[in-house]
Image 1 (cartoon, rainbow, N blue to C red):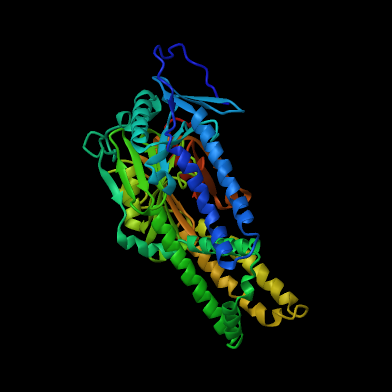
Image 2: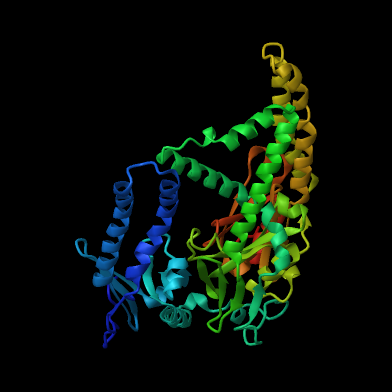
Length: 517
C-alpha cells in the first residue's frame, strides 16, 4: 500500500469517488478467451482428450477471471483532486494508493482489442519513480474520452507546477543557441507519421526470428498437451525424406531460406502490429505524444521538461540499407511500457536525425545527432586493433595446436585464420564510428559497430562527470569521460579521448567546475 502524507494545503473540497466502467466485466473474460482458442481448436480437430469435461476444465479459469473482474469493479474507486490522484479497492486485501499531482510525469493510454471493442482504455499514471509499482497507478478500464480528459488534466497540472519542466531556453544564453522558441507555433503540430516505404526495413529488425521461435515453441507445447506428435505427421515425414535425398549444402540452403522467409514475414507482421497508425505530435501541453498500434493501441507521452537527450541507433542490418531507430533519453519512463523510449519505428537515417532534432526542439539535425564529429586520435585505433586481433589470434593458434588431437579440426582450423581479417575490419569500423562533438545545446557522442549509436545529450541534463583511465589508456595518453545524467542509461561515455580534450569538454560545459592551476 502506498499512501503519501497529505500536505498542509490539502483539498478543501474532496472530489467524488468514481467507479471503473461496468463494461470492464466483459473485458476480463474476453481477454482470457484468446488464450483458450488454440486448445479448443486442437480438441475439436483431433477429438482427443476427455470431451466436455476437459473443455469445462479449460473454461474454469475464465469463470475465475470473471469473478475477479466483478470484485474489482465492485470495490475499486478512484478520484482526481486538486492535489492528489487516489485509488482504493480490494475485497480481502484492501489497498489505497495516492500520488501527488505535481509529481505526475506520464499519463499513457493503452487499449488491447478487448478494450477497443467496448470503447475502453487503460490509463497508466506515473511519477517517474524508479519503483514501477510505487510510482504508478493503473486505471483498467475507463472510457476513452475519460482517459483523454485525465491525460490532459494531469499533464497540464504537472507541467505548470513543476519547476523542473521549465524549458532551458529561458535560462540559456541566446547567442549561438540552436533551440527553437516554443512560441513559434510548433506546439500542437505533427512531427512524424508512418510511411508505407518504411515497411522495407521490417525484415531487417530481427524480431521475426524471435516471433517464429515463440510460435513454433507454443505450437509444439499445445500439441504435446493435446497428445499430438507433430513429427509423426505424414507431411513432415515426406519433407524429411525429400531433404535427406539432396546434398547437405542444399539442405542447409533450403532450411536457411525457409527460416529467413518466415522471419521476414514475422518481422513484417510485428512491425505492422506495433507501428500501424504511428503519429508523433507535439501537444498544446508541450509534451511529445506518440500513438501507434494495430490490434493493441498505445499512446505514450514524453514531457519536454524531462527530456535529456535523444539517441539514433543503427543496427548493422539496418545500417546496410540506410535505416535507423530513434529513441528519447528521458526520466520517468518505464522501459517495458515505453519500448525503451522509442520515438520512431525503423526508418531512413535522415528521418531519424530529423525526429531527434524535433524532439530536442533544435532547428537543424546538425545541432544534434547529425553533428559533424571530432575524430579520436590514432592511438584509439591501435587500442581497437589490439583488443580485436589478440583474441582472434589466440583462437587461431589454439585451433592449430589441437588439430592433431581433434579430428574435425584437421579441416576446420584453417577457417579460424579468417577471424584475423574479420577482427581487423571490426576494429576499423569501430574506430570509424568513434567520435564526439560539442554543440551549443548538446554533447554528441558516437560509438559502436554492430550497433552504431549517436547520442545527443542536452548540456543542461548533465549533472556530473567521471574521468577514468585504465593502465593501457594512461600509456596511450587517452581517457574515458562519462557524462552523468538522471535519464536513460545514467551515463554516456566519450571513449578513448585525449586527456586534455576531456578536461576541456568539462570546462566548456561547466565552466569553473575544475580547479585551475
